[in-house]
Length: 138
Image (tube, rainbow, N blue to C red; front, side):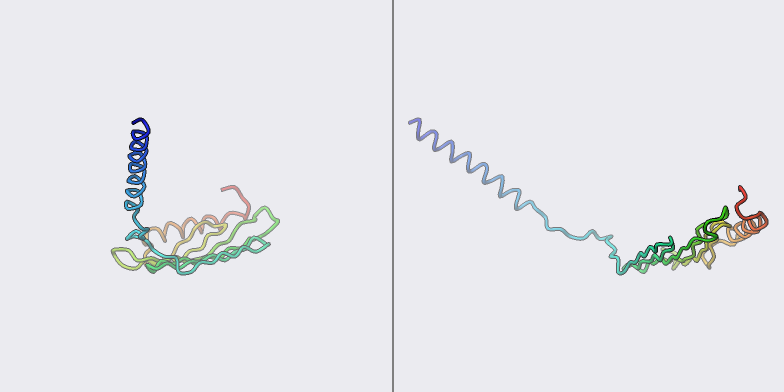
């Protein structure tokens, strides 16, 4: 009978839809952190009204960074941001640690992991920058 055919078709349709829903639910994989996930253990960023700031973080793999910055010579043609900080991490070759200053004389990295040629080149550039008057075009 046509009614029986409609009931059978509806039952088959419901069965197909129900099977699809069950397959989707069974196929859902619970969230698992990727093996390379590294948690952030602590972080801070404080920005002050005068533009100075403090920034740092520590991660679960031993990486860290600390930085402070403040405006130097505010309101003058020589106005510049002065930044100092450090970062460290573990590489396959061993621990890496770099300290730095970045100011009107440029970026100046130091530390046991900075190649001596880079330190020498930076020192020469800083000496050249210091010989020019502040605010001069470079």
